[in-house]
Length: 380
Ligand SMILES: *Cc1c(COP(=O)(O)O)cnc(C)c1O
Image 1 (tube, helix red, strand yellow):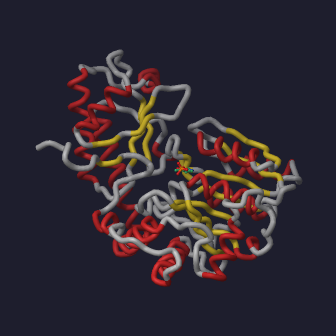
Image 2 (tube, helix red, strand yellow):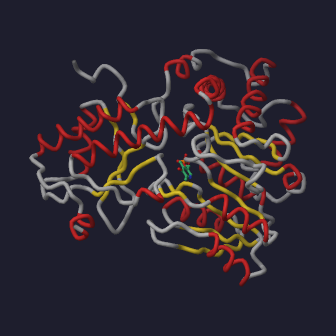
Image 3 (tube, helix red, strand yellow):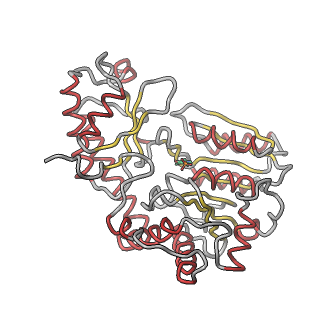
């Protein structure tokens, strides 16, 4: 049977494969002024807030656009113009956070570790102790460029102890990894519709501590990316300030119903962990080695060393795996040749095993025999 007549499975960190029920929810048109649609918006904000147990402390402010729009909106709204942001970097999304913070005109200091080294609470403790001018800390929870998990809980505790403000990009971890606002203090935490909550892409959202957001009027140097304005307008009118991504909102509402029915965050994490185990077992059998050690690897996306065989090139490898029904993701490291496989989306371990089979057949077709990546070879 050919896979050409159905959608390929997306083994990417968003957009990702959504369920039929989520896709079907988009087969309606909604008016942005209509009370029925605005009720959906309110419901979605409430369901999202429940996932991080933040109903008593934070408000969920949705924002049109991809995830980065919401990261930029969060920095631009939360950080006063004379603020000073320490950005913790161990990959491309950390670099992006630093870049947009600089572009927003905020004073920016970066602390960078290698792609396979998590930032530690000790690092942050030392950095904050040595510079009293730092007002905010920017952290990437799961750095999607490799799949590394940074210790959010420990870092949040240190930032709070120093009396500074924490801004967390939890884009690829929200909904899957546990995050609890009652025990993990943060002033802003950002995620989006098209990642672990398995909605379509097109809407981001920021959980902002209410007492902080109330004081953020006038911080933003952007009209469209002003979370304070978006929030106050929505509170006053129940509507989005500018044209809402209606289909995305209603599909996300459907995806969140399925999220709850599945068993919420623990169940989502369990399924992704099973996907990760199935993927790793199969790929190991083929000789592949992951870039990160399991201890610091989140079960969200896995970076693999590319085959060292000279017959390997990512493009033909990708094309052939795609013809078999699976979309892989290119690597994002500059030092080593890698590719990535996502474990998230409306898929289970069976799909992961089929994906491994597609990789196996592709290796055979391309005549690739030597799979073990350079680093694994050197270590062996
Ligand atoms: C996906 C992602 C983003 C946002 O990327 P967009 O392409 O703008 O949706 C930001 N940070 C992290 C860690 C991500 O995984």
